[in-house]
Structure formats: structure tokens, C-alpha cells
Image (cartoon, rainbow, N blue to C red; front, side, top):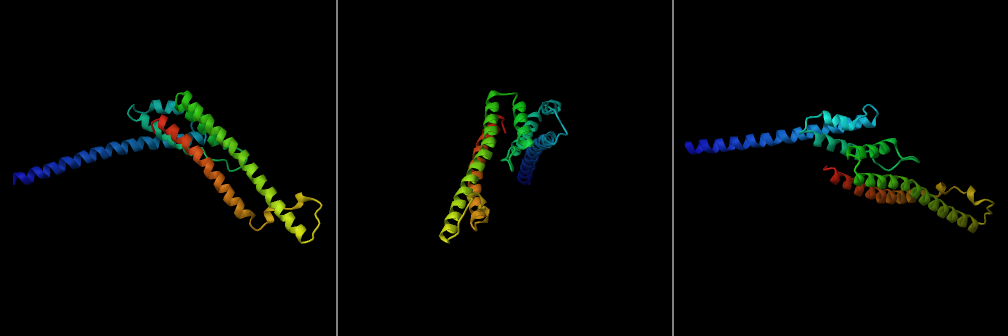
Amino acid sequence: MAEIKSTIEMVMERAARIAAEATDTSEDQSAEHKGMRYAAAYLSGKESDLLGYIKKQPPKEQMNVRSGMARTLLRNIILPRDEEISEQALSSLKALQELSGNSADIANICNELKQILEQYNQHKKQVKDQLDESVRAQLKEKLLQQGHQLDDDMSLNPAMHPQYQEEWSRVSADLNAQYNQALDQRKDAIKLRMGG
């Protein structure tokens, strides 16, 4: 019977250790979630002092809070949907530099990220202009073969071509994939340097 009791005691001790480890993990996650929520509030303009908030946290939570903030900020650095880089992306870049203690390394990566976002719009416009010109030329050739006379090539609307949307979707998806890969590489470098 003593042998059974010692096995039960061993199982209970192991269960207690597992429970203690789970508590540590959930405390880390809780601190990280606090950081994520605070960074989201910062980006929406409801909060303003990231470093001050971190300093107010218990010392054992500060790294996890900072990591959570960095995760939220990095998630908000995305390709622009229109002509302008989003304010959230620009605010995120600035905040990441602040969180890093204005580290030159992080500042350089943030500058690269900003350049990528700026180049994306320029590159997207160039690719669209090239596609428009190519489709316009195809339309002109087709109309001339049918015996139509054209006074102004620019009056041809490339979007009217049956395959235009399909081709633009394909080209746009390829461009987005290239630029997202470049963004992800820099974001991973920031995560690595910030311990996240």
C-alpha cells in the first residue's frame, strides 16, 4: 500500500508542477495582452505614453507588456490600400522606435519599412499604367483589324477588356506578395531584436 501511496504522491506533485507552470504562462500571456490592448489604444489616440505605461507595470511583467505592444504595432504596418500610407502604420513605426529606446538598429529597419510602403504605391501605379497601356494597344489593334478608325487612343478604356480585371487581380496579387514578403522580413527582424 505504501508503494501505491508514493505513486499517487508523485502524480500529485507532477500535477502541482504543471499547474504552477501553466499559471506562469497565463500570467505572461495576460501581461502580453495588456501590452497589446494598450498599444491598440495608443494607435486609436486614446493613450499616449507607451514607455510610461510599461514602467508602471510590475518589473516581472514589463518585458511581456512590451512584447505585446510590439506585436500590435507590427500588425498595423500593412500595405496601403489607397495612395496614402495609413496613419496607423506611420504611428506604429514611430512607436516601435520609441519602444526600442531609439535604437539605431530598429530605426534603420523602420526606415526600410517606410521606404517599402512608399515604393509600393509607386510600383503599383507603374504596373497598372503598363497594364493599361498594354490592354489599350490590344484594343486598338483589334478595332483597327475590324476596320474602325481611332482619333484618340486614350478614349479606349482598358477596363472594358474582358480579361482586364482577371489580369489586374493576378498582377496585383503578385505585387502584394512581393511587398508583403519584404515587410514580413523586416518585421521578423524587429521581433528578433526586441525579444518577441
